[in-house]
Image (cartoon, rainbow, N blue to C red; front, side, top):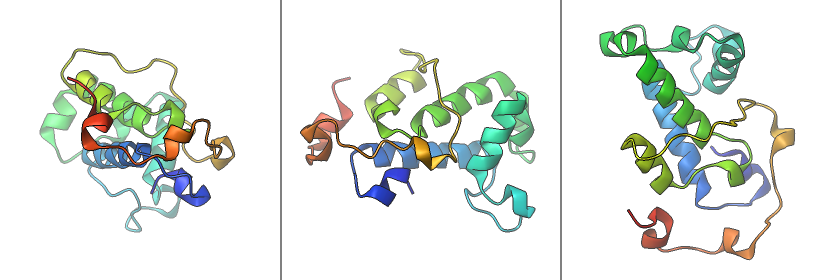
Length: 145
């Protein structure tokens, strides 16, 4: 669940956050919360943050998937997409149309990512623009392609 749910500031970026979680689960071959892991590894985001800080992202890639193991550089790029979608501050998350452009190779992931997914003090709970709270049509959310 996106961190902004805690403050009731709900925008279209909660879906982007959810996409980031699903992408990370696929890449790592495990659930976001998994009690079958050692207690310090129950939360995938904490593990992801730790491995990012250590510079060992490939160590959390799904070990049972030969494709994941073979394509390390592409997997790291997809982990950057996931991290972009998982920014604690929802205003820093991309639109889904930007994510699609990255997946199509027409755009790059933002370079200044915050990999501190577990510090909720960084959460931006203020609505900077009234449009952040306005329900938008699907065509507006996805943007032009």
